[in-house]
Picture 1 (cartoon, rainbow, N blue to C red):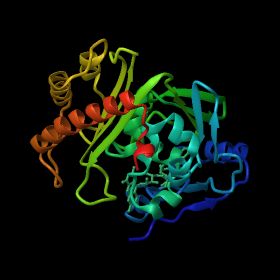
Picture 2 (picture 1 turned 180 degrees about the vertical axis):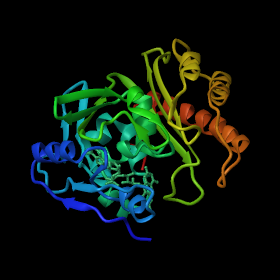
Picture 3 (picture 1 turned 60 degrees about the horizontal axis):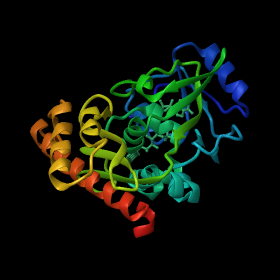
Picture 4 (picture 1 turned 90 degrees about the vertical axis):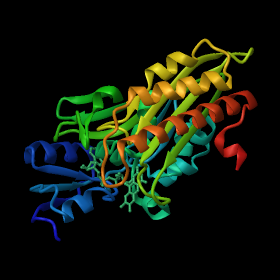
Length: 297
Ligand SMILES: Cc1cc2nc3c(=O)[nH]c(=O)nc-3n(C[C@H](O)[C@H](O)[C@H](O)COP(=O)(O)OP(=O)(O)OC[C@H]3O[C@@H](n4cnc5c(N)ncnc54)[C@H](O)[C@@H]3O)c2cc1C
């Protein structure tokens, strides 16, 4: 199929983007990498009157280290994030997850902001964003609004973003000390969206006790789910096999996956348990060994 007719604009400044979006009413779509928008347009699942291309807007592609926060520009591609030394060093969970997005061609074009706004609950970035509690910066006619990711994702492909707002950057909290992370997923084929994805980051003290945990699951509901019961099971404890097993089972109890053409709900629940166990174990080992995912390959 072909898209419905639309007017196309390619402005060269954020001010123009916001102005065009505000003038166009609710029937406007912004375009970044186009990797998700173009299929939706072609299948007429979205029928905008106006498309505003962001690719001529300068200054939206960067990784900035602000100490306790890494700020990533909305137009930074998945490949740039995957290959960024500072992301690899300070946000190993994000680096590991982004490397599992689609194929190289997709990572070359797909963008940081675009993936989060697309809000596919099985996608890698939304799952990591929920685990770590990222924040999105949205510029609209009234200025910048900072949106915590818990408020941002509203449901399947639905966010809190208004049609006249553009995401300019994503703010990622960076943990200090002895941390380890792991991103695990199962997909039908390599490069496909995950059937189930699990993001885990742990911090340990010098005695090996877990002081902080972030766990989220993707592909098991209309938006990624923070596994709070799993986190509670491990924080304050010295991690061992039985405890990790119980924590993984807690994750499966927190989710309500649905059956679809790709997998049954029961299969997803089982995979969620196995992947959570695996991710917890690997994150703990990496924290103990002081290794990041990239260091091992
Ligand atoms: C074959 C294939 C395989 C893929 N596999 C995976 C995968 O395994 N994992 C995965 O996560 N993704 C996958 N994707 C999707 C890919 O990651 C996309 O890059 C991503 O979902 C959307 O990013 P984009 O920059 O292409 O956004 P676009 O397609 O341009 O836009 C997506 C949505 O975000 C909005 N938008 C984009 N940027 C902004 C902004 N700055 N502010 C406000 N709104 C904005 C658009 O209006 C649109 O609604 C795949 C895509 C394809 C085609």
